[in-house]
Structure formats: C-alpha cells, structure tokens
Image 1 (tube, rainbow, N blue to C red):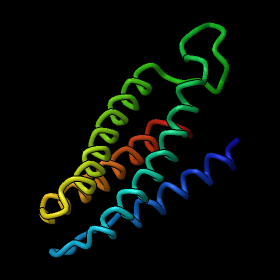
Image 2: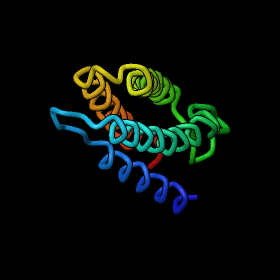
Image 3: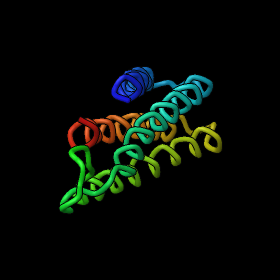
Length: 128
C-alpha cells in the first residue's frame, strides 16, 4: 500500500508543478489544460486523504497501530473543501470568462496554490 501511496503522491506533485501559470497574457487553451492538470493532482491527493479517512479511528482500546486521528481527519476535510471550491471556481472561470484573462489567470493560480496547500496538509498530517 505504501508504494501505491508514494506513486499517487508523486503524480500529485507532478500535477502541482504542471499547474503553474504566471504569464500576464493568458492562452485560454493553456489555462484549461492547467486546470485539468490541477484537477488530476487534486484527485490524487484526495485519494490519499480518503485512504487515511477510511482507516479505523485512533484512541480506542482496540485501535490498530495504523489508524486515523479524528482531528487530522477534520483538517483534511477542511483542506479538501477549500481546494475543491477553488479548483471548481477556476474551472468555471476558464469555461465562462474567455474575454477576461486577468480573472482566469488569478483563478488558475489560486487553484494551483490551493492544491499545493492541500498536498502540504496531507503530507504533514495524513499518510505517514
């Protein structure tokens, strides 16, 4: 299972690096591809968070050594909600705001940053 999680983590980091957009003039196709890469990275990170969430809860007398902490699950859920909303907003901006490159650029960059933050939280609190 660790090998599987390591591969997912590497895919997510690759998607994060692919999701960088800093140009002032934005190509809508490139923005769409960047959002797609970000969504792919998000799916990989979410898979790791869900795997952690599905572990038995820690703190019970019968808890196994590999378990999930309720406080960590709460943090993962909050990070997921923030990342999901930001990525969905970027996707919506790319699809509907073709004539507003500044808005699209800001949304795409925000989505990439949200994915990085989610990945950092999963790395810090999630699967060890």
